[in-house]
Amino acid sequence: MFDGVHDRRDSRSVKWERMEKIYGIDDASDVLPMWVADMDFPAPPAVTNALRERLEHPIFGYSYICEECKTAAAHWQKKRHGLSIDTAWMLFHQGVIPAMASIIDVFTVRGDKILVTPPVYPPFFSIPKNLGREVLYSMLQEQDGDYQIDFADFEDKLQQSRLFILCNPHNPVGKLWAASELEHIIELCAKHDVLILSDEIHSDLIHHGETHTPLLSVAGTERDRIFTCLAPTKTFNLAGIQAAMIVASDPRKRSLLEQHMQAHGTGALNAFAPVAWKAAYEQGEAWLSELLEVLSQHISYAIERLEREVPGLKIKRPQSTYLLWIDYRALGLSEQEAMQRLLQKGKVALEPGSKYGEGGRGFLRMNIACPKSSLQDGVSRVIRALGPARNA
Image (cartoon, rainbow, N blue to C red; front, side, top):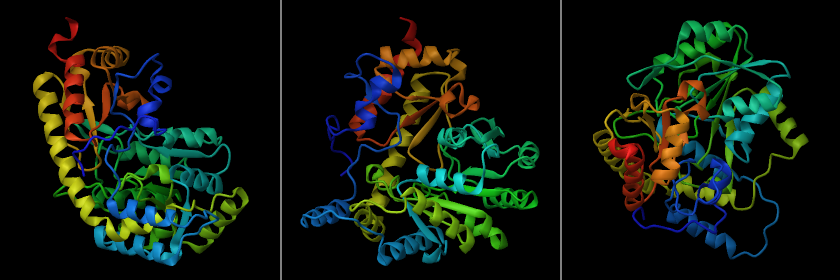
């Protein structure tokens, strides 16, 4: 399942077929993509079997999320994370990014300030800006690969903000927020009457010995100020099927979101999304367990080789996700130089850290969710580009 190499070219894959556009290069045919966060693994057989069965019915009309889909998601959250969700709290959307946009559009107005904590997933600041909101940045503080919130600066910025967007688990640094950190975030947001949007799309990709704490699980009486965005798409490599949900306990806020979705025609999912959703949550757990074991091995392999063969590279082992956050500051290369070496000499596409905000400059994000042979090739390419012989 996880060793076979599947050629993704000619499948309309953004990851494999849009590198020329994304990286501004003439020909990427020999460049290995290890950038955007989707996996080069097949979806769980239970999902593909369910989709195949659905294809046997030749009519693909309007579809809806059934009660069994909602129950499957609720059971999954309870079993995996100890989080109890009432199915009445669920609203469905085409993805976490459009769900975020809907929340921002409904509960803030043009000119409102939205707080984010870079380095962080770029739509956290691009979506608010595109909607005419002002983005405030409270930079995460990094020391030896560990990231913390500067709570003095965070509270100062909260006093000017209407909404805070939390990445939990954090992309790109792979951090799991401790319950005490989440409780303090909620305490400060309640103090200054700030809403919280918690993106928890990576919450199932938790490595052995670690625990994800859903923000709602520590919210107590403040749960109505929280919107949680969840999806099976990152977990089970289903991004192209486009399905996500917003969990909102406040019925008034849900009603406002439903009105917005009706006004914009965004409340319905495609005919295949409910099929994949239900199969993944009901039958995907064994597949996920195997995936997490593979990812753990890949992370160990990549970190060991990269740190050993490129002196100066530092990589903090992520607590979650299949993404490495590589610190190359000791190499003395500018971001432009590092990217040029990777693309031209290494023939490998990683993501530049500044994409996640200025706090990411000097870092690279590397996706290791691929067959072992591809990983070995990709690591060798990074070493060729950034290793001691790079000036030869």
